[in-house]
Length: 233
Image (cartoon, rainbow, N blue to C red; front, side, top):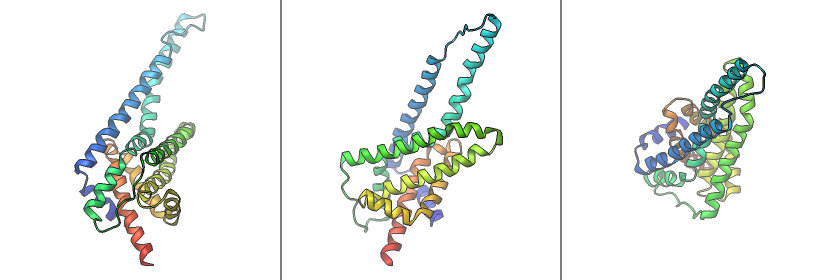
């Protein structure tokens, strides 16, 4: 099921609505990381004078100045799924509509989601994914000595979070948020597997730019397949 949904999502990747969401979300996410780097460079003092030895002050200034780069790079790599997903979630309804118009025209139409509810859904998704990834950052860095530890933690945490948030976001287009959450819990194994596929896409440079769009489209197919199964029972 998940593999078939993934292939269907790939097949529709060049849809104009997909590309519009991709462009908007990616530009906003890049702007956030540029702002983060600029803010860190501004906050980090260029010249430190806390020791009596000038050479020690210069060495410390050099170390702190260059440490900004790995912090930004590692943080950007780990947080890109959260940030890009957060901003693209504001536009993902367009992806849902495009997939359903092409593949599920005979299914009941999407319910009317008001601007306020849509914003709250996107905000909730953004806050949950970004906040929990930020809280996990110290553990990512603590596990660096294990080499693979940060990636295992990153994968498990985000597979669960992104799978949950994407599934409920799509489900909420056809049912109220409480029903969507209950439906997702009954299919938590599939939402986790989909989340794992999306996170896997995020780990591949350049491919990760397309991950939120592919993930949302894939989740639409998984939602409708699960819904058809429940209705058939």
